[in-house]
Structure formats: C-alpha cells, structure tokens
Amino acid sequence: MAMTKRTTILADEALLVEAQQFAARNGTSFTKLVETALREYLEVHRPPRRMEFIDMGSSSGPSFSVADGWDEEILAAAADPVAGWSPGASVRRDGAGTRS
Image (cartoon, rainbow, N blue to C red; front, side, top):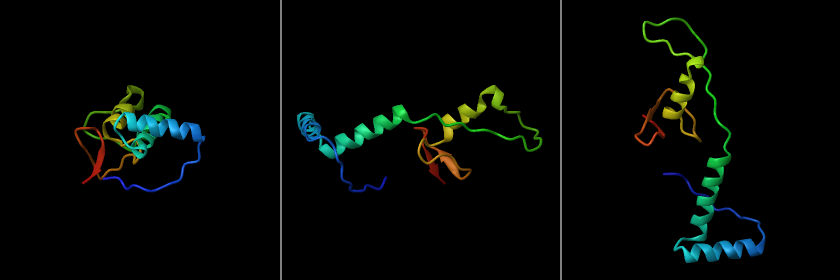
C-alpha cells in the first residue's frame, strides 16, 4: 500500500470550488478527485523510459538486442513506471514490479 501525505494546494478559488462541487456530485471526495487527476496527468505527461543494454560477454541462451526492440518489451513487462526495475523484482499479473 502506498504511503499518503497531507499537503497544501494553492489554486484559484473558483477552480477549487468547482472541483469540490464536481467531487460531491460524483460521490467522491475532493482528496480522491485530486489524487486521480494527478495520476492521470502524470500518466499522460510522463516521459517515456528507455532501457539500454550493454553486451557483457556471451551466453548459450538466445541473443537479445536493443536493435530488435527487446529493451522496450522488457521495460513494459517488468518495470514499475515510478519505482523502475531491479534484479530482485518479480512481475505481478498487472505488470507492476514487486520485491521478492
């Protein structure tokens, strides 16, 4: 579960009133509305992440090359968009990384 933190938002008063009314009409809290809006904004505006591999020897397994697009496939499957990827992470069904 993610940690929550209280914060202060400075915004135009009319915008805040409209947001509070919108939240009330839709049966949600102002806090949940702001959190949802932040998540959606960041999802749309987050720069794409690139993972580059450096060849470090040979293996009897299949060869994976950045030129073949494997870096993006691995990143999409195993990297959490915020926490990133680490060798000790496993992949849940929803694609989010978790520590094992």
